Structures are given as structure tokens and as C-alpha cells.
Length: 217
Ligand SMILES: Cc1cc2nc3c(=O)[nH]c(=O)nc-3n(C[C@H](O)[C@H](O)[C@H](O)COP(=O)(O)OP(=O)(O)OC[C@H]3O[C@@H](n4cnc5c(N)ncnc54)[C@H](O)[C@@H]3O)c2cc1C
Image 1 (tube, rainbow, N blue to C red):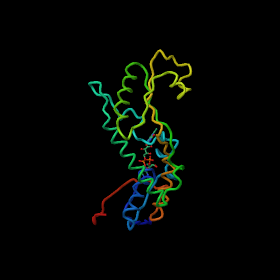
Image 2: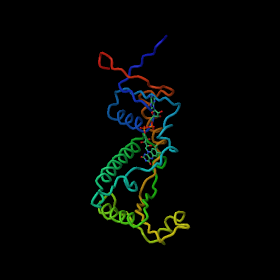
Image 3: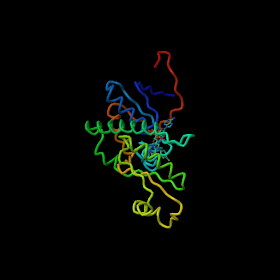
Image 4: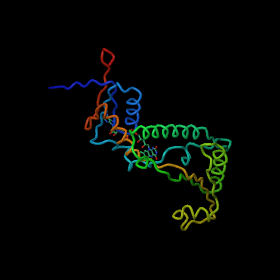
């Protein structure tokens, strides 16, 4: 049985957005290192990073209520939302740097503005969004967030959800106009093209075992 031995400084397993991002960062910061990507499928971004397999929300805690849990005393804890939003701004800075330096193309191919909206109904849900809005909108990163309870305004913004709705059950929205829609598949492809200029991307390679050699490699 013949064996091919490939020596590489970095082996990245899986050709999704994580390997593509890490590979691009390594190529930028350690351009002398060789990078190999091993993917069991026949294409990049064919699993979770495929745009059909995720919601494409630029996760910045503008609409995801799990980042602003209600505490036992009825307060709303926004600490996680602040840290997630700060992380997303770092991602945006990296993407802007990549566009400026030519390893990502036109930003419209992977990031576009779209409102991010949280919805609740019932008295408790409405009160929760009121508190969430009061705390978040006081923060620079969430400035401009709106709190909407008026049925007419709700119907103007979300006509499909308003159609046939019984507004005797109170509704509330937290609305942030400058949210983002991200195509992680397009990002993965473009970043991997950049990684591939200095290394190799192997499709149809299922990694089944990793063993440390006696020389530490
Ligand atoms: C339904 C859903 C909705 C989501 N919505 C959002 C959203 O709105 N916003 C957001 O930011 N995130 C969202 N996510 C999360 C986001 O999609 C993932 O966090 C991200 O795509 C993960 O990237 P990844 O590179 O780690 O994984 P993947 O893109 O899944 O890539 C992993 C790759 O590794 C390969 N692989 C695995 N094991 C091996 C092996 N042993 N050998 C070789 N190859 C292997 C797989 O085939 C795959 O191609 C969502 C996820 C889901 C499932």
C-alpha cells in the first residue's frame, strides 16, 4: 500500500467559515507557515456555513433574546449582549481590512443591511421588551433601537404578521434598522481562495485519526 506524506505547519479540519477565517488570519499574521485544509465533502461551506443552512443574521445581539435573559428579580441582564455585539464589530473590522487589502471582494457579496426585530406578545412579554429596550438603547452600540407597541405602527412594519391578528393581546417589537444579513458561504469561499494561495485545500478527505509524532509534530 502506498502512502503520501504531506508536511504542513497547520492542518485545518473542515472547510467552513471557522477554518476559512482562522486560515486567513494565519496567512495574514504568519505568511511563512503552510496551511492545509481537509474537508470530507466535495465543496466548501456545504454544512452549517451554507447560506441555506443558517439564518444569516450577523449575530450582534440586536434581536436574539437569549443574549438578554430576564433575571430572577425581573431585571434584564444585557452583559452578554454587549460582549457579543463588541465581538461582531471586531469581525466587521477584519472583513473591512480584508476588503481594503484585496482578499475579500465587494462587501455586498457577503454583508448587507437588514432590520433586526424582536417580537413578544402578552403583558409579560411586552414589559420584558420595554425593559430590554430601555437598557440597550442607552448603550452606544444599540443607540437608535426602537420600542414599538402601537398596533398601527406594528402593522406598517410587519404587515404579514399583523394580518388577522387580535390586538387585544398586546404586542411589542424591539426594532433595529441597521442590522446585517451575512452570507457565510460567500465569505467562506472567498477566504478559502486566499488561504489556498499559500496552502492546499483537500476535498473528499475525511479525517479519522490524529496522532502526535515523537518529534512533537
Ligand atoms: C439552523 C442554523 C441557523 C443558524 N443561524 C445563524 C445565524 O443567523 N447567524 C450566525 O452567525 N450563525 C448562525 N448559525 C451558526 C453558524 O452557521 C455556524 O456557527 C457556522 O457556520 C459554523 O461554522 P464551522 O466552520 O464551524 O462549521 P461548518 O460550516 O459546519 O463546517 C464544518 C465542516 O467540517 C467538515 N468536517 C467535519 N468533520 C470532519 C472530518 N472528520 N474530516 C473532514 N471534514 C470534516 C464538515 O463536512 C463541514 O463542511 C446557524 C446554524 C444553524 C444550524
